[in-house]
Amino acid sequence: MSSAELVDQKILKSLCHQIKAKKWATTYIFTGKELERKKALAIAFARALNCSHQPFQVSCDCITCKKIEAGNHPDVKWYGADEEANSIKISEVRDFRNWLNLKSFEGKTKVFIFSQAERLTAEAQNALLKSLEEPPPGNVIIFLVPTAKSLFDTISSRATHIKVPSFSSKVIRDILIQDGTSQLEAEFLARMSQGDLARAKKAYEDNWFQEKNKWIDALLKNPISFLDEFHSASRDEIARVFDFLMEWFRDLLVFRATEDRENLIHSDRFELITSIVSQRDFETIVELFEELNQIRKSIDDYANQKLVLTQTEVLLEHFFK
Image (cartoon, rainbow, N blue to C red; front, side):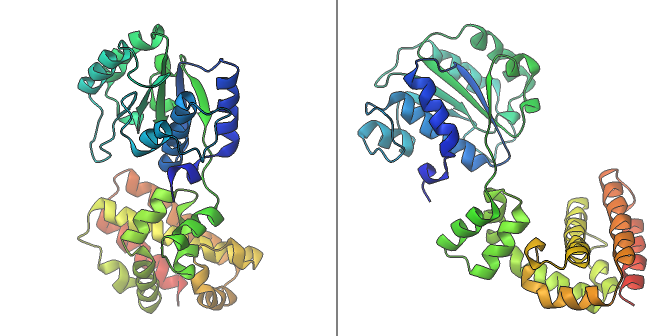
């Protein structure tokens, strides 16, 4: 799926109206948890600002739009493009400031995009402030962040904020199927990801659909043996196990309350969920879910890992009796 297909058309239309009225802002903050969708909107906005065809169409394939889409237009600069890097350092901000004061090479407007801008160091954010106070005309600066709180208030207050919505589960499912994922797996990944396409794709790469089903089978066969496997695991891995448990028992709780398959994340295990729920009352499942939730919070508070696992083994053994 191309970046153009990921764009929220309603937001893009609003930005194009700003361009037509010649009243667009200099600095924008695109918020939302779906990075790929924020990137796609930033690319489309950069194209709209520089495309010679008006009114702009996201399907435009002029040379300018093609260059921006491909990431090789000289007037559209990306910072923080290395998504594996832990931070965006002041050296990149210095490069940005140098380019900011130059005239555009080919386009009408220079566009600077800071991807995952929450990684900007404190030093880098402070260095940005002067440039954001009085940027030269003919420039647009875009920060892509999960929330505006990811940036200093002094930066946030100088920008126009645009919230980019997450994908619906149906859209993520369709994208995954288009990429070759089976219907059953795509349905699970779409619901599990909660609107985060990148998370769904990462789970697909990690074979999480197959792995989680192995975990479910092992849990039901013998909960103590299942958890014993993680006594020497890292805190992050144990947190992952408890996230899985919370998700699984959330499905049991939801189905016990609603009897609606459409509300399930693990809908591929519908018959199993039906069987388990039919043998337990609502209060029993609620009680276990709440206790697991408290244990999950204690992991974040650095509770003793072995004690946490032992406590959970007792709870699960009692539940599955």
